[in-house]
Length: 145
Image (cartoon, rainbow, N blue to C red; front, side):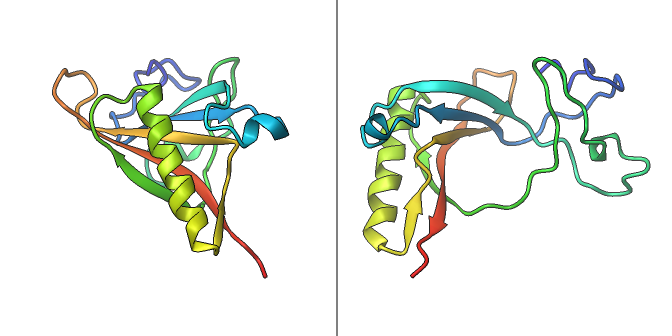
C-alpha cells in the first residue's frame, strides 16, 4: 500500500484502485499438487496502477521499477475462472472456492486449471470496516486436442 501512497521510485501517488488482489502460490510438488491443502509458498499483493494512456507523461506506464519488495510490470491477458467468496476472506474459505472452481472447470473436459496458485480479489473501500465483495479466481488453460 505504501507504493501507491508515494513510496516509489518517482514519489508518485496513485489513487486507490479496485480490486486489491492477493495472489497465492502453492507448492508444486507432484504429490502435493493433487491435494486440496497444498502448502502456500508465496503471497503477492497486486494493484492496478492506471491506464497506459500517454506513456510519455503517465508515470503508471513506466513499468520497470523493481526493489526488494516491489516490482511493477505490464500484465497481459489471461483466462480465469471466478467465483464469489461470500463471508470473510479467510484462507479456508478461499481454498473451498478454489476447490469448487477446479471441480467445475475440469468437469467441462475443455479446460485444465493452473494448480500452482489462486487469487483472492477484494472490491470495496480500502480503509473501512464496511463489507467488501470478494472473489476467488484461478487461471485456466484450454486443453488442446
